[in-house]
Image (cartoon, rainbow, N blue to C red; front, side):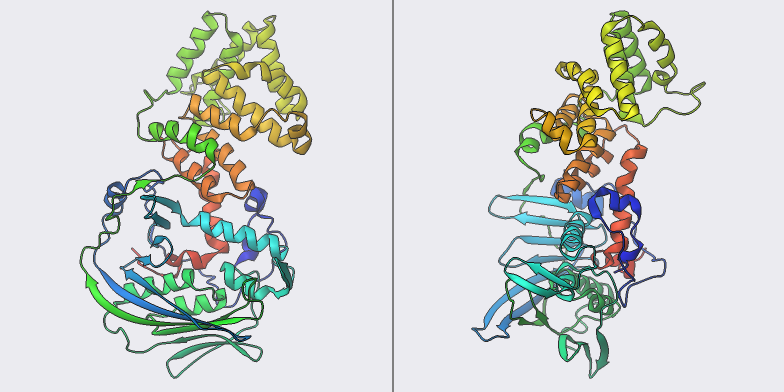
Length: 508
């Protein structure tokens, strides 16, 4: 839905959305009136902290969803059941898998691992981005009509769009409402049937009904065209049936869900178990990075250096004759506060104003001239020269060393496969992680490392880094990290069904 409006900056972050077609039928095209998510809710929060930042969850209605599955090609009937707690703007799903909180107002998805006694608190954008990446890759950015996937050849793109909750153009689906039933017909096949009635009325108020429908859109693989029609309803259904074609069901299957309301749950205790937080990512992050990041975000990493602190430290290095370190520290200052202003006179960014004097002092100093040559190579796009000149500074265990690691990592990435093959012993992700450990209060490095994981297909880790970098105490968001906010907005635009606030859910 609305995939045609994705912007070049989103494509450049690994999305490859150029060439997508018109919006799908039913897509919202007017400016939405949305609930403003609470930016204070971040991935490292404990359950009590999440509740406090959100302002609580309030009461909920318990709902039971009986589910059955029948293979269209013949086979045994499979049955199951889910229990969901439905709040004003959230749903807690409890079934055989992880217990999952869909917090629509705050655009968070929280999964509870009862066995490990942990939970992960993720931006819903990360999960939408994962499905968006799958859709773009398998459908050639929405241009391929038939999808070859796993053991299935020639799967119609419509079914991929239903599974991912994302579509590139209008689907050939006829929607109709008759006898209290919303029906979606494609060709001669009824693909979705949603029945309304009095099965749980007046148990759910209008906001709870909207939240329940928003959960159905996430839980059931129905096409975005149908999702938009359901989200436009001011009532919750009593029954839902839909057809699926997938690698698991190449001959097709039909699922039928029967919905009933149960008890009211006052003051729902969503985080009742008191589980500890689990952050996503590989061992590199679990062992090296997350402890230092959590310490920084909690304000336990020592004093937060400001522009004056940086200037004092630069002057100390200059007085000690470490002019290369002073130059690198000047670069590191920009990783904390963004690019130097165009007009430095009168600026609080003293490291920027002193740069010319430092360069004059460094003439004839071999280490300084080596680093200066490396920075010049960065500016000119000479990746090999930049890495060769800056690599000796990787041994530094200070903020200047963090600058060197960040610069070398970015040069390796910019150089591409040739650079990575030429320097197999250097891992950009590890260099960036080490830079954060050495200096965890520099927002830009979180963007650089998050971007690496985004391109590598790990949006959960990427958005966790973006959000933690934005939550650093004593730091404003730099222009570079501001791109993560813009990225979220563009994901909301191309995958609106994941963000039902855009359909008026719980407007302020």
